[in-house]
Amino acid sequence: MIHFFTEEVDFNHSILSPAIPWIEKAILNEGYTLENLNYIFCSDAYLLQINILYLQHDYFTDIITFDNSEFSLSLDGDIFISIERVDDNSQSEQTTFFHELLRVIIHGALHLMGYDDKDTFSKSTMRKMEDKYLDLYFQDFHIDK
Image (cartoon, rainbow, N blue to C red; front, side, top):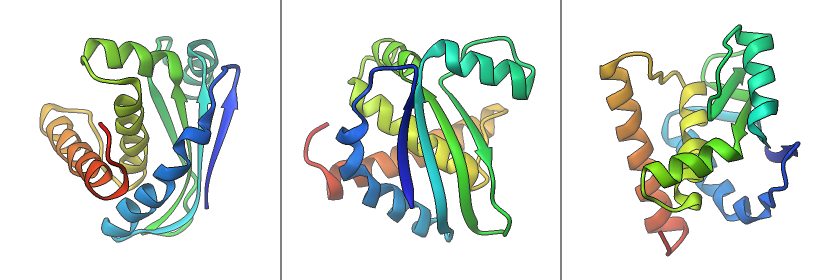
């Protein structure tokens, strides 16, 4: 199951209901079984506190993922996304808020499926995978970019 929640931010996550089958398809395409996936949309301040408390990082970020999976190829996790960072990223990337939000949503799922972005090569691979699944969304699940 995929669930959407908010913490300390005014964000209507119901706009993401059509994205649920897309996320599920990406997970299946990568050979994983979906157990439970929680997306928590929050403020910069909320995510900063998580970053400090759990990762000992004192800086803003757009996303933090926590893998709760007990079995390989099983997806169970919590993905925290700062709506403020997504908004800033959309402006700096010159794209829409919704497009950037989808990118960060699939980015978090990809992290839980073993993709990382710690070096140049893995960042490039991650971006290609994000683009692959964004193309799938806009081709098969939605008509507007």
